[in-house]
Every structure is written in C-alpha cells, then in structure tokens.
Image (cartoon, rainbow, N blue to C red; front, side):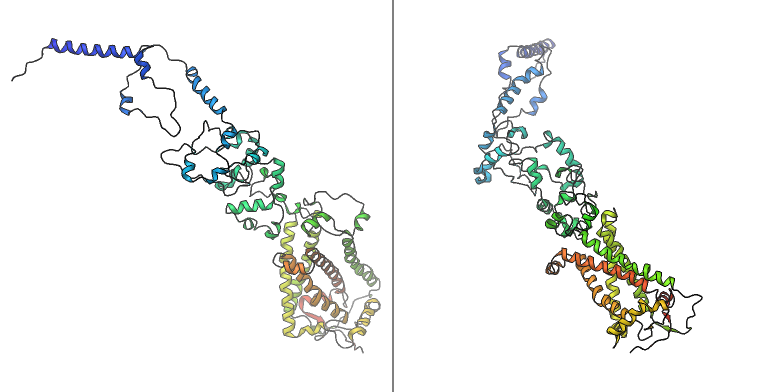
Amino acid sequence: MKNRPISFRSWRWRALASVGIIAGLLLFCWLPGSTVAQVQTPTATSPTPGQVAPAQPAEKAAEAPAKPEGPKPLPAAVAEEKPKATEKAAKDELTNQSCYDCHNPDILKLSKEDLAEQVVVSEKPLPPATRPPYVFGDLSLSIDEKKYASGVHADTTCVTCHNDVKEVPHAQRLKKVDCKECHDEFVENIKTSAHGEKAGPKATPCIGCHDVHQGKGKSAYTEDFKRKVCVDCHKAYGMDTVKGHAKLYEPKLHLRMECMLCHQGKEPGVHNIPAVKTKVATCEACHTKYTVLSKTKPAYVGLMSYLTQTSFINGEVLKKYGYVLGANRIPALDALLILVVVGTLGLPIVHGGLRVLTRRKGPIELPEEKIYLHPLPERIWHWIQALCIVMLVITGVMLHWPNKFPGWFDWSVTTHNWFGIAAVLAWVFWLIYNLVTGRLTHYIPKKGEIPKGMITQAKFYGYGIFKHEPHPYAPSEDNKFNPLQKIAYLKFQLFLFPLLLLSGILYMWPEAFRGVINLIGGMTVLALIHYILGALFAAFLLAHLYLATTGETVSENFKAIITGWGTKEEHHEHV
C-alpha cells in the first residue's frame, strides 16, 4: 500500500509540542525548593571505610545540560563549613588511646590477613613498607604506652605527627612524617652535615637514628651516640668504616676512639657533623700538649716545676686512651735527655777550643802514600744511613713536641716512617755486606785492645792530640778503626741501632704487633724505649761528627769517606 505523505502543518505542530513539553519539565526541575531536585541531590554522607562511592556513568556526565541562569549558589566557605566542622570533630576524638587500641603488643600476633582488616585497603593491598636498615631503638607497629609516656613526645598526640589520619581505621599506608614541621632547626643542620643531602641516596632519615615512639631527650642522645652506634649504622648501610678511614694512619687504632672527637662540627652535637670530604680535625687536635682528648687543659706552671715533673702530662688521657704521641711526655725525662744531647756539644766547644789554641803553626805536611779504606758500597751505605739518622732525629723532635711545630705533624709522621724503613734496609745491607766480604772484623776488637788499647786511645784524645803526637792506632786497610771506635760502632750498629729500628717497627704498626707490644709492657713502655734510644743516637751523631775532625787535618776523614782513599800514616805497635 502506498504511504500517505505527512503534511507540513501536521509535522511542525508535533515538533513544537514536543520541545515545549521537554522545556517545561527541565525548568520545573531546576526551580528552588522543587521536590524533584531534592530527590536527585546526592547526600553528603561519606561511604563507609573500605567502600568506594559508585561513580556516575561517563555518558551521563557528558550529557549533563549546561547550568541555566538562576539563583546564585552559596559561597564556598559556607558550603564547606559543615564538612570541615565534621572532620575537625572526628579528629579531635582521635586520642592516643584510640591508637593504642590497635597498636599494642597484640598487633604483632596478627596474621597478614587480620592486619589487613585493621586498615582501609584498596582492591590491591600495598606491599609492606620498607624500613631504615638501622634504627636507634625499636620501629614496630606495637607501641609501648609506658615508654611513650616517658619519652620526649609524651605530650604529643599521635595525630599531631600522623596528620593524615582523619578517622580509624585509617588508610593502609600513612604518609611519611615531616620532622621539619616541629624540628626545623635540627633538620636544616642535618641537611648541611655529613648525614644530609650530600650523603646521597643512602642518607638515613631522622627515624634511622631516632626512636620517635620511645625517644629520649637531647642530652641522653648525645651521651648514647658512641662509636659503636656510628659503626653499626655504617655497617647496616653497607659502608666500610675502616676503608672510609684508609687515609688515616692506622685506621683501626684510631677507630677505637669516639667518632665525635674528630667529627665535631662548629657546634656540639651529631646533627652538626661536617661533610665527609671536609677535613674535620687536624692531627694536632689530639697529638699535642693541648689535646682535645683531655677534658681539662694543662694548667700553667713555672719552668722549674714543669722540668721536675716526673709523671706524664695529660695523665687522664694516658689512663683512658693509652700513650698518645705528642700528648703524653715526662718533662723531667725530656730535660735529662736534652742535657745529654746538648752536653755532647761540649766536645767541639771545650775540646775543639783547646785544639784551636794548641794548633800547629805553619803548613802541615801529610804522607803522599794513600790507602783504600772505604769501598764504594760502604760509602753509599754510610751516607744513606747518615741521612736517615739525621731525618729521623729532626722528625722525631717535631713529633715529640708538635705544639712547637704547628701544621707539621702529618708530614713528620709520613717522613719519619719512610726514613725509618730506609734505615732498616740500609742496616740489613750493611750486615749482609760485611758478613759476605769479611769486613765485619774491622769492628771486632783485637787482642790487647780491651782495655789497654782503649785507655791508650783515650789518653791520646785527652792529652796527646794537643801535643800533636801520632795516632796510636792509625787506620790501615785491615784495621781501620781504633779500639774506642770499634766499641762505639759495635755497640751502636749491632745492639742499639737494631733495637731502635725494632722499636720503630713496632711503633709503626701497633695493631699488627699488639701481642709483642703488650708483652713488653704496652705502648707506653715502647714509646719510652724508642724515645730514649733516639735521643742517644742524636748525641752519638754529634760526637761522631766532631771526632771525625780529629785526623791529621780537620777534613782528612771526611775526604776519605767521600773518595774512599785515606792517608797512610805511620802505624805504631802497642803491646
């Protein structure tokens, strides 16, 4: 059947009628006080914990009509007044007891499933939170109410710090507490310290050291932060404390001290520890008369009172830490050894002065015949050992009185050690060379030289030299030393010098030879032995230099030890 066409009038009337009806319904819904509007307005009630409010379909949101002009909405402050008041009231009701109801020792007995019921979780529960590898106290879900009440935060409610908790049960994961909100000064100090941002991603947060739930006061923490705490924390963070102090001489020995002795900032406290790359303390801070290891500074005393003191200065340091180079010494022993060394200068002053007064008039004629006294290996050894002894004496003085040479302690330690090693090698070479070549016999007294030869030589030095008598024991190729020289060189080269070197080796590596050091009485005894031997060698060096001038001429013996050739003098037999 053929369709009947719709007339223009009939279609237009129907369209206008439909638009009018729809417009009337929309206008009626938006009028204030409308019953329909009240029914469609969503309630202000929040979904219960663990539930999610159903979201409106995206299609409806897209099709929502534009808001027509009408009465102005309420101001935002008025609109939010009721939710804010409700939120504040709910938070005020959250007392510490509200938290203790869950966070008590029983919470540690719950399974993961039971724990999940104590908090509001999403569809996919979050993994367990990571915790700092080191905590000064306990970091646990269980809070000891008594300990918290006696801690530094006793007057602080839980929600003061955990301010994202609005109701209980709370969200599964709380945001990190910002300690800066209350402790801004300390946090700023930490940021610029060795434990701050410069420490990198491994830097521990505040809770890495502070047990905030059972925390103590500042004074208690200052007392508790000892070396073990620092070492344990560094170990937990994968840091090798010994390796980190490798540039420090004998790091294991120094690490027995309290860390804060060296790592002390401009102001006291662990929050002010300087950055790692900063030179936090000089060696002289400990190794000096005015050492930081001593709680009381040495009181000023008169010179005579000081020089007659037979006990160690900084005695409390000696008792607590053991012998500390530069910080411990006996003034009376210093005065005695200084007199011994300075007294040696009496030889060139008194004896040399008499030689000058009785010197020969006119030129001195020496025999033209030469003898080969000092082979090249002997001369090289002699000057190397001489240089070592001179440098060991100089640096030893700087180490014993570091306050007289500020800024040189570190250099003196390094230089002293290197020349000490060189002296050991030189002595070993001397011993092997003389044993292999048989020249050790030059140092062994022959028959009749003890004591008669010694007395004869002493008479020459005390009287004959001023009368220009010939040397009673002129050097020869097979017997180049007189009896007094043999006794002196034998005593120093085969006894005192090896003992000095051995004590130096023990002194240089105290950790490696701790058993031996303890066997001889500890570092204090070792230090005294080494110091006394060093002073004796200083005196020997001065005497040796002067006696080398007692040849036929002042320079004769010096030329021989440089070139190897000496003057063949008339040798007198002594029976």
